[in-house]
Length: 142
Ligand SMILES: Cc1cc2nc3c(=O)[nH]c(=O)nc-3n(C[C@H](O)[C@H](O)[C@H](O)COP(=O)(O)O)c2cc1C
Image (cartoon, rainbow, N blue to C red; front, side, top):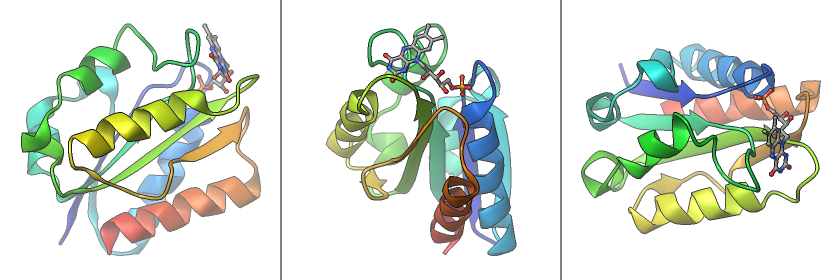
């Protein structure tokens, strides 16, 4: 069974809702899925997973949440991410998605196989976005 790890940070629950649908998609496709908030996650969990999804909303001024998510992401290297399928997702509000473009570029620089351009949505994810999260989970499990 393919091991999929989903790690997220969410302040008001929008990105958490997306994370749960990514998990469901991967489970429905037969993967063994571990869901962690970023405070529970560690780099060696990323290393052991066959495919990964990370979720974080746009925070600060178009950056990752700085207390927990940014240090976690900054601590990853090619050793954990190189060649691995990686889904990125998160909610935003008033920006244009710059945080996700920057995040995807960072992960690609570590040779992660980033799924598309990352899955973003304004505020609360719609039913359509949740379906896209489910599809992302299925792709990661495949
Ligand atoms: C402190 C703070 C900073 C934020 N900075 C941005 C930003 O730079 N760009 C943006 O589009 N949205 C920004 N937002 C809006 C959040 O990304 C948005 O509310 C999102 O839905 C939160 O997701 P969550 O429910 O998973 O925490 C910010 C929100 C907060 C509370």
